[in-house]
Length: 359
Image (cartoon, rainbow, N blue to C red; front, side):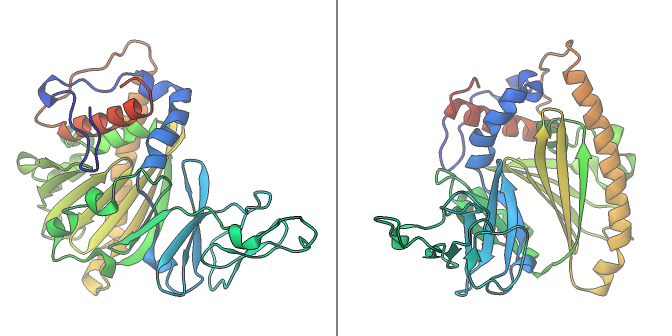
């Protein structure tokens, strides 16, 4: 597979594809490798605009084992830095906050401007050749899109606009940035993070795992479309009055671990975060249109989402047990229903190969 800003060129045809080998779901050392080959080399959802409204507002986010400080600069743009002082690695912030005018290390009091430039270093006047002007916090990439804030640890990530190309056109005229943050709910699931993603990426299991959701989605019209860095599962809604209303369901997966579930008047973002070879955390953020009709459906929507999540957790945990059973070998994928899984696995194979691992 050959990687580029426009996405990898497939190396295994869909109609001949197997799932990833078991080792990539059970090997703890491989999970450590994925921090660098996958998470540190992709755009990661880290915050939303409502947390970073005014100058000096800041949030902490963790990506690939690194803690990142994101802030709103007085010029209105975002900045992001490793939360690591250049002196002796102390933190610049313990938690999210508002209105900071400088960043002050909590260890020894070194201060930095909101541009990340060292401004003050107490009692360093006797240090020979010490030049504060040459010292600055380590910056990381940051991008704001549709009210969501993303960061990228590596300069080798594809351009953000390339990764998310076409999504705004698909969902037009819906403007996600106009939706209001409502609630965050997190779950821990006893499975490898890729098991959870694999499950999200296909509607093949809907009739067997999600009877309630299956009644609301037209399975015959359920369609998966592939873009270089994301996939879209799409289906018309039916019989969903009181939960989603009339319209269509758009399920976006953006490599490697971000999901955008878009319904009429509602956005749900999911982040899948690895906690170990057999554990992950899924963080659900709910956003709704600021109107009475959308907000009136919020409680029913979240109860229904919790029901679906419980069904997904049960099957994903069972799959994890099957993966470690010692009897499973990678099975064939269904070309009609599992193109999203194939696409995800091909992106992973390219990332592993680029990092020097077996594809």
